[in-house]
Image (tube, rainbow, N blue to C red; front, side, top):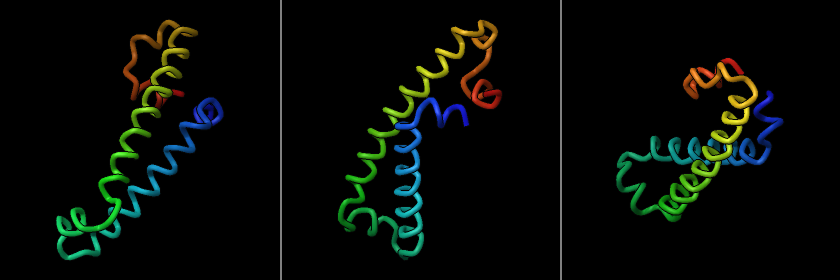
Length: 88
C-alpha cells in the first residue's frame, strides 16, 4: 500500500502493462499457431516494445523508492530488493 501511495504513476503504468500482457497472452493461447499470431497480428510488437519501456521506467522509480528507504534505515542495505519489498 505504501508503494502505491509513494509511486502512483509507476503503479498506474504497471496496471496498464499487466492488462496488456494478460490480453496478449490470452489471445495467443487461443490461437492454434502462437508464432503466427505474434508475427501477423497488428501492434503486438509495438505493444511489447511500449510495455518494455514502461517497465524500465517503473523499475527506475522502484529502485529510487528502495534507495530512499535504505537511506532512512541503514540495515535495509543488507537486504536484497525482493526481501526489502516483502518487508515493506
